[in-house]
Image 1 (cartoon, rainbow, N blue to C red):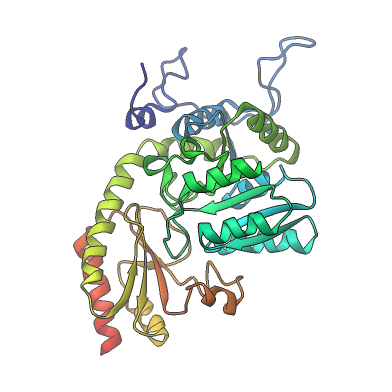
Image 2: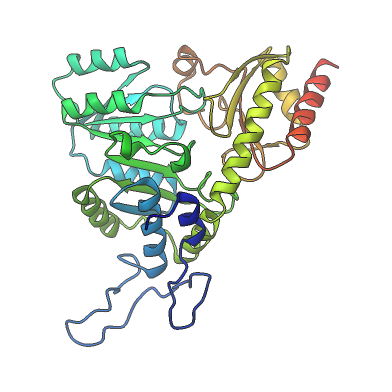
Length: 367
C-alpha cells in the first residue's frame, strides 16, 4: 500500500530500531564500523561511504521526489558542485537567467577555469535559439520559480528540449519542494535543493540534496560523493529527518500566509509591484524608490533582515547587496533585479502581524 506524502513524511525513520522499538530514529555517530570477519561487512564500513542515519534520510528524500537515489551533502552549494562533477571538461550548459547569486558565482568560476561554458536564457524561445547556435549542449539548469523574480519555468517544455539535445536537465526545486512540484515526474533528470531552506525549515541546519531519476545517475553520484566527501554529518541527518516530519504542516501554513500577504500587498499603493509565483511562501516586492530600502529594513520589527529563506521565522533579504551581489550590477539590472527589490520569506507568524509590520515600516519611511 502506498501512503500519501504527508504520512510518509511523518513516518520517516520510524521502525528503524526493532530491538528497542525506538519511535525516534537512532543517531549513528560512529565514523567506522566493525567487520564480522575477514572479507565480511555489515553493509557499513566507514561513515563517509555509508551511514545508517544518512541512509534513512536519503531513502525518504528519494521517495518524496520520486527518484531512485538521493544524496545529502553539507550545503546546497556542495550539492550543486557534486552534480557538476558529472560533466567532463568543456561541457556546455544552458542556464535560466534569473537564478541564485551563489550558483552564478560558481558557474562563473567554472568558466574562468575553462572547465565549462555557460549560456543564459530568459524564455523558451531564447533556449531554442541557443540549441541552434551551439553545436552541442551537455546540460540545462533551471530554477523554478526563479530567485528572486519568482518567474515560473515550464519544466515539461524544457525537458522536451533537453531530451532532443541529449542533455541532462537539472532543476533546483528549493522554493516549492516536492509538496508542490516534482520535477523528475515532469521530465527532469536531477533535482537539487538547498536543504537548509524549506526542507529543514528552522534556520539551524546547513544541508544540500541531490535526487537522481535513474539508477545509473544515482550510482555515479554515490561514487562521486564517496570519493570527494561532501558528507552531511549523522547528527545533521537526524535533525533533517526530524524537520521533514513537519514539512507539510509548515509549508501549508507558510503558503497560506504568503497568499494573504500578497492580497494585501497588491492593494498597497506604496508597494510598486509584488512578485509571486501563485504558490509557495516566497514573495518579492519593489518599493517606490531605492532610497526607501534602508529606512524600511531598519523599521521592521517582526521580519528579520537576513539572508536565507524557508525557515519558521519570516526573513527579508536585499538581493542587491546580499544573495545576488556577485552578479554584475549592469547584468542583474538588465533582467529586472533592480535595487528597489526586496525578497520576503514567509514564516509561521500570524499574517496580521506580518502585514502590520510592513505597514508600520512603510509609515516610518513616509514619516
